[in-house]
Length: 166
Image 1 (cartoon, helix red, strand yellow):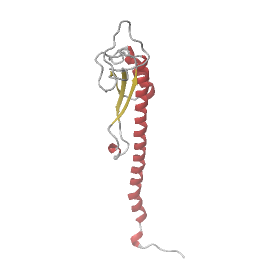
Image 2 (cartoon, helix red, strand yellow):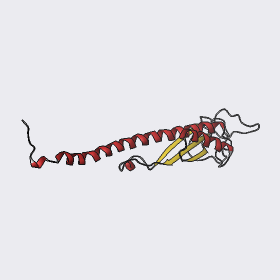
Image 3 (tube, helix red, strand yellow):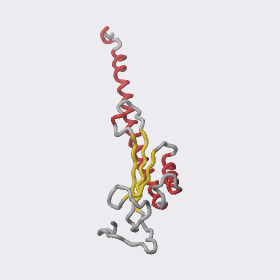
Image 4 (cartoon, helix red, strand yellow):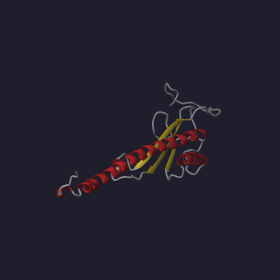
């Protein structure tokens, strides 16, 4: 005993598939987009952290464009990002703020100056909905304190707070 479909149900499966398949692909691409965005954000933070680690070791001219110390930082970030085109910023910042130091890198008071490395690059979404997740750029930032560097002979320490930093 076979059942015959009525004329109104012919092609219904094809129409339903035509409506559902694009939604499935959109969902799949959106999921990939979210995962890629999270991965890139993690990579940016890791690259900035790698750059800050090297910057702590090579702090003397880390905030001077084109210097050997800046090149060390750029190389460390580039190793993490494996060819990703990025914009890199390294600067020495005040102990309790995010403004750049006027005296450049190199602790006037040991353990007070910090080096900050920022990494930024554009993010290309995989799906039409992907442009609504996060921002159009990927940002990574890391701050590390320059420690263990003795004061130069004859250096004076100005007014300091309870942590020992000005």
